[in-house]
Length: 427
Ligand SMILES: *Cc1c(COP(=O)(O)O)cnc(C)c1O
Image 1: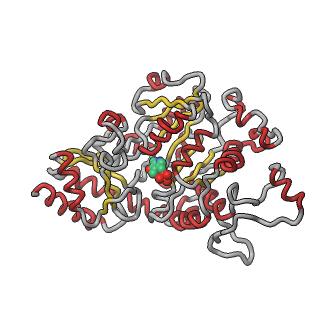
Image 2: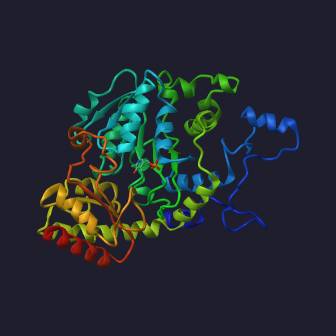
Image 3: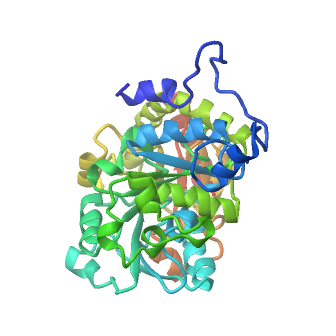
């Protein structure tokens, strides 16, 4: 089973004789054993098996293994949200006193998590310009740096990351590259092929695709050599007192990182995805390849329409040959990038807001990467807390409209934009 379209449908759940064809929802917190000893071995990680859904659940594991296969990783873990995925992905290898080099243009929620909440935990982040040279970026590293974090395509500024440059930077400094691949999805970009070590997702977005279930995922490539940098990662390479002194790299090899995230962080912090949500995410995953193709086709058409319109001040979509990131997008995601476009209207912020209020098919929602076309004004909504200066640093111009192109007929989407532009400018 090699091709992504096939994995979307057939990956994960593999029913045996007489078992349900469709992934069942294992709506059970607990799992039964015959002897006390059997259960004891599970607690010691001497045997593998389900015992409590906070650690592992068969529905969740089937979905996680499908996502791992799509990304080409060794294993994955579902989380309750994308926020939990990014938090765990870092905290699994970076504790109080540690430092992370982070690309500045990232999702607003992740920026808050890193710069406010994780800072309170004693973790320090240096935010860097992803377009800076290797030499410039190398200056951000410190002796206590434990990871590099970035987004493949940043939300909402749509910066395409030079993944190989970032992977080299991370590896030259003995740390892994963690990439949030939410916008591209593995259908359009598989970051492990370009040197990323860990991938995270907000499955809430394209993977679900129907705005039904909040969820997240962490995928481990299995490629990072923790032992070679053992002094930086004692959590993986030294005994864990909460499991009678096991050493994750010795016991779990390539799956050391993701096993620790599951049996230690998930055990202790508990942000699990409910099996019900995992089931819904799986339905979304079945059509992910088909939907991404249509999202990208539609977004390209809408971007081309906007670029030609005399009512638009600027358009940002990496599928346009005039775009700053066109070359990187062609290199890392030649089949297409994502369905999200941003643009600003001539006349600035007020006209932009009038435009949004006049849209009929595209709806104003705090959501993105959905089958339905949706629209948001980050400066008034998701990034409301940020100052004008912070907005610019996060790559969010005050007049930026984030337009998430759905999978409706693109002629209808463009017609809606056209009538709203007329209404906004003639008001
Ligand atoms: C939405 C989003 C998140 C957060 O995910 P939730 O599922 O909303 O918690 C993280 N990263 C990116 C790129 C996102 O778009």
